[in-house]
Image 1: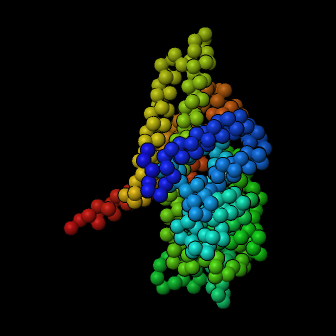
Image 2: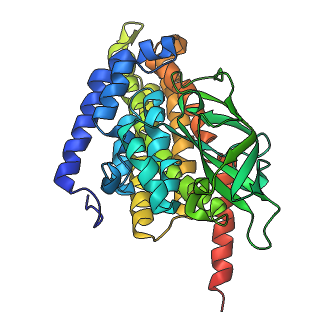
Image 3: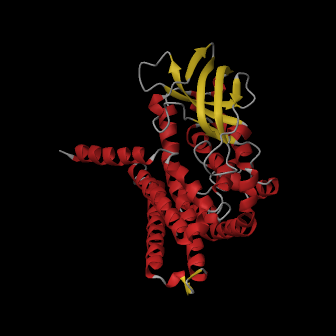
Length: 392
């Protein structure tokens, strides 16, 4: 793998990957049941993740991060996907959709104010975009931002906001009122969690991903100063959202590949040891066929993710390819997880068996950062638009 010009050197990055792999497999995997039962990441695991720089691995080095580019990010994500997805969720928004808004669109003052804390894990950033009626399509936002003197007043509600119960900073998307004459009128604001008028609801009770907390966020007359407007202008909110989401989709695709690898490994280990009627089930051809389908999906997903990340870093494709990778890999991991349960038989349906947790955890991957249906619209619409643009 060749690093981009500004990326961490390959030899240094190889050490980072090795450390993360050891951390995931030796420190976190043995505690997956503990995470599931407590619905929380243990404090000592969080501290070690922070000490390793995982809260800022995709934040530029000048702001205290490790400075990994997306080609390197996906390699790390495939390692992180090998265990409970709550681990990655703990620092995912710092590196991804929230942190990248600041990295790509913040003023120098905003970066200096927030990015060092985000990279160190002292600040948990939360990406507040989704609303009732406005999920995968930010154009449907109802949260408003009304100019008031030289500042702004925010009103509205957000739903399913990752890390909201523990967030220190909310990256809030809102529709400007009155609407500007040009543009879509969506802006993005930096709102500290202790700002008057901002409240966080109780933790959501989800199907899976125990330990990854989400909640509703309500903004009632939340007043922020002019320095809260990301980039100092109200014209970049939609672009910031779309750019961060596109990058995040590649990361989620890589995460799915890592989880699919874990499901495959669990399946192979079980098939090689479990018996039925005195015979090892891995000797049955239909079981081998299921393992073959799992392996094929994992290898195809890994190759696709790596190719997509490279195209994103070079600028060759930052729209269609991320949606292709996200669509394929998240659908793939659902199929691999389903086969894993099938291979395990009744055992795979029992709580605290890894493949049972994986089966529930990965269902969410087809929903956030844009549903599979949204990805299909982006891909299909983009192909048609590209053909039209190519016509003489």
